[in-house]
Length: 131
Image (cartoon, rainbow, N blue to C red; front, side, top):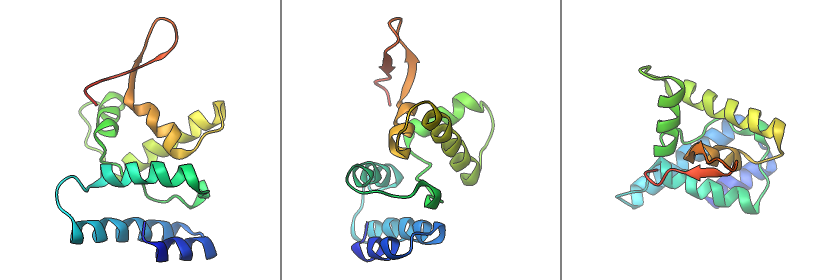
């Protein structure tokens, strides 16, 4: 994320600033790079950012909803339905809230579980290699 956005966020964390920061990040990356620098790349960057700094979950008003694992998750929950970006975001929020009630976790930690399609017999998560 651009350091200026992080500094503004640190001074006054808000939902509007969070979304503006994410949109600015995507615009900046797309203006300087090509190829795989999309929402999946932003999601991977957010995973690392959350590992080293605190973000107030109440200020997270946008998330990169178009990651391949998420797309698979939406199809499992809502087969045959076209979801809006906001509906996809709400599904991700519900996933975080449900998992965070069972075990304290960050948003990226909770959403990483969408990569796990099925459980093995011994109760351990089995990661789908295709995602």
